[in-house]
Figure 1 (spheres, rainbow, N blue to C red):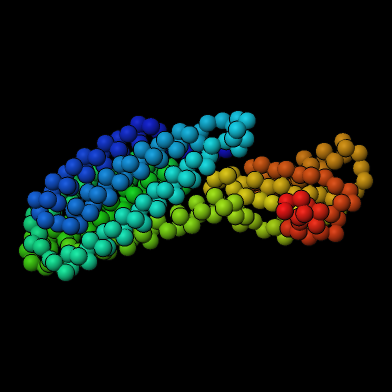
Figure 2: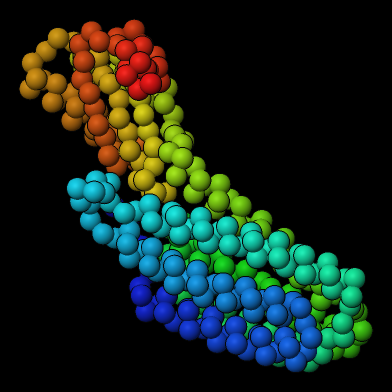
Length: 301
């Protein structure tokens, strides 16, 4: 079982840092006239909400299984990750639209103010990213929150570069150009998270070598066929697997031995955490790996 949760204290610290950056960048954006700075402020405000959502989802996901949620609450983190990533996409589109407007109606930017605020924002974002980095490798939920903070750090770098240039040169198109560049990057990083979370929520089959699984199961003494296989994921770590095994006519106690061997194989070699095996003798012995029996099709319909 994976235990890589981020503490509530870290989530709280990151939230406070983001709120402080937001207030600072709103003031700095208004004083300097920088769309990139105001856009970053809006992004940081969304990050603060996303961080709170991520912490709440992590807390819910830790609840044990019960009669209403027999697989537990781990999908809460997947839902939070998807919502965070969707919010990133919406923010990206909004920033692009606003940047295009500023291309058409450029405004004078106060470079020194823009630069100073961006440097402070970068330092705070880097501190937040450092606090979340460890958990981002093990949780889609934390990764989505981490990407929020990391994209803010990148946008701060872009604003710093823009602030340095605008301090010495009058380049009206630079601020909206930087805004579009950051927005495209944010969207690019968010799309894979949306794809992965949707795949989990749609119960898509995880990437397993099913032909090899069948080959390995058939090596177990007494197993003559494998059919009616199902596999799906609860979250990005926990894979659920079920299958029907046609076995030679044997005692129930002998079937248990077959089951234990199959369970050990699937858990150790393929990383499957929950295995359900239905032993059968003749029923379904001519079926393929993923075929549904005709009688079951009629029942499901």
